[in-house]
Length: 162
Image 1 (tube, rainbow, N blue to C red):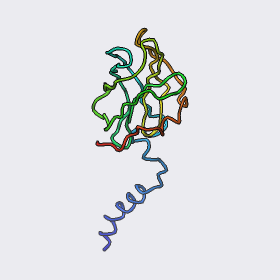
Image 2: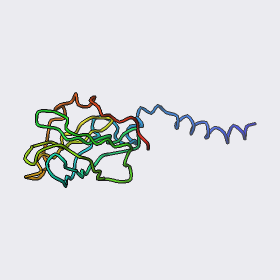
Image 3: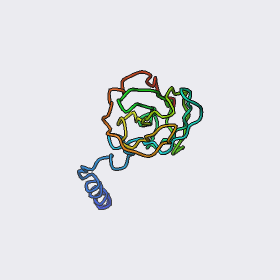
Image 4: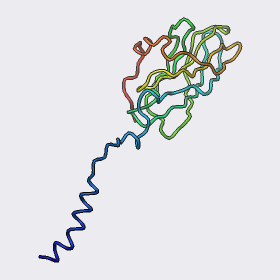
């Protein structure tokens, strides 16, 4: 019995030390899910003619799956009117940045618009593209809260495939 206690005592001490209170969170080891995880527009190209433009929009987003992904990009007027929305039906975890096309977009050649992305977890980013078909599109910034009620306007995603 004495030998058993002699051999088991170090194991008991080790177990007691290993079970000390740990106040760290798993958050340090998980992807950024929340308000800091934003999708941004990284490229814009277009084809077509007035009131029938097709856009190819590049989006960079910290997708982790359906729990966090860029769920659409949209074209809005400087007044905050939704002109076009391209729903993204799934996450793009292994495809970053990615380009998706959309249209037809009914704008004139000289009409100034913003193109921005939306994240299902954090909403809009302030990194957008601004311009017109006539003069091209350039990187710009737009307050994240600009026209924020559009986030509840149809069309909206009906789910996430993967």
